[in-house]
Length: 111
Image 1: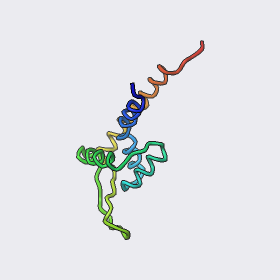
Image 2: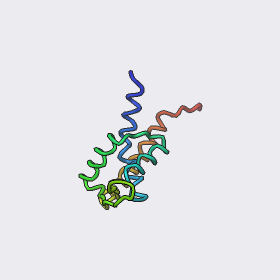
Image 3: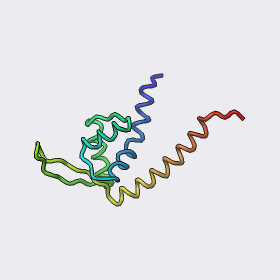
Image 4: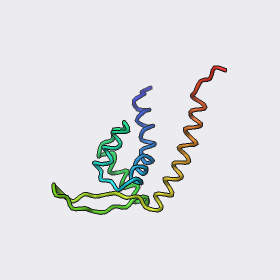
């Protein structure tokens, strides 16, 4: 079995949660998102990010605005919507429950 494939699937599964969490803190441009994800050791390329952002926008979890750029074409800045904030809150609860469960299962105790 390929561990790299399994690790990639695990990262992919939490990417929406991470993106919404970052955009909840402040409006973000795609380059900002990529930089912040890299800081968290989640390397994501634009080809992965754009379809995900479109899916989140179509689900009304994100909206965006265009801003003129002095060094190139206008930039699309993403912001979280109220519906997105509610979805993010649900994801946070699920993440907390999941990490507690996984930690209970995977931690070994010497009792």
